[in-house]
Amino acid sequence: MNEQVNDEFFMRRCLQLAALGAGTAAPNPMVGAVVVCDGAIIGEGYHHRCGEAHAEVNAIAAVKNPELLCRSTIYVSLEPCSHYGKTPPCADLIISRKIPNVVVGMVDPFGKVNGNGINKLRAAGCNVKVGVLEDECRQLNRAFITFHTKKRPYVILKWAESADGFIDGERSPENNRPVWLTNDACRAMVHRWRAESGAIMVGYNTALLDNPQLNVRAWTGRDPLRIVTDRALQLPDNLHIFDHSQPTWRLNTINDNCTENLQNVLLPWGDAMLPALMQRLYDAQINQLIVEGGTRLLQSFIDTGLWDEALIFKSPVVLDGGVKAPVISGLNESSEMIGNVGLVRIKSV
Image (tube, rainbow, N blue to C red):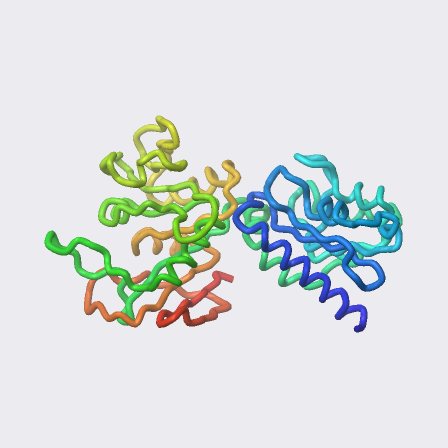
């Protein structure tokens, strides 16, 4: 096994470990680390959740014979931190344990790190290699990167549409229930995405007509912050979204009063609303938002360019009328089948 293949092999293990932090590490990045000596892994770890030990700390602590560290290589999917935050700098730990070789997947875009960890390691005499499986490392932490480079959450748009391009059928007083266009496997995927997102958003009509709970039930994980647009505070208080079971923002133009787990968020309306919301979410350390609203809300994100990824379920059901699906175009489109339902992924860039 040549050096490049060897490095990629161990970095892939870092990425596997890092992914175990999905839904718990945020707003911190998902990071995995392995310690290798004589071609064998002697310690591995990942960042479990914000405020707890980083991946490098856990990997080094897992090494049963610390005497091997002085001739080992530590692989880490993200640059070791160089500053004091909720935990001490990982670069300092690597230096103090005299680990001579460090292989890094990608540079940390966070302003307090951003190359400083690598520079500190090199200044201490460590042999540092950067950029192994960088694209894969960036893909895993795309929300973290967007948060620190664009100063807003990574925005995912999600909807299901019929074979003839509708997201819902015609509603009437006799039949006011939404049409189910997907299947149980798709539902589980959606709840996993919710668990991995800091916030979930719907519009006024979706909250009123569908009365969604917007929580995580078909997956294991934490419930996201719920966000609903209610400009004049006219939504009924008995909706699920106002049940105080999880943190909820009610976007409006009237007041910013709050009660337990329910905060009225005062925002400008019109074109200024979404940028203002992005700032509020950034300030609240929400690094990923999933939007599950109707066409009007989804299209507003598309038209303002405030989106990063669209996840669209393509159902075989034909509705012959109803609410038309949003219009979107982007790059890097891919698709797969989830049972009898297609899943199309579109990225903005």
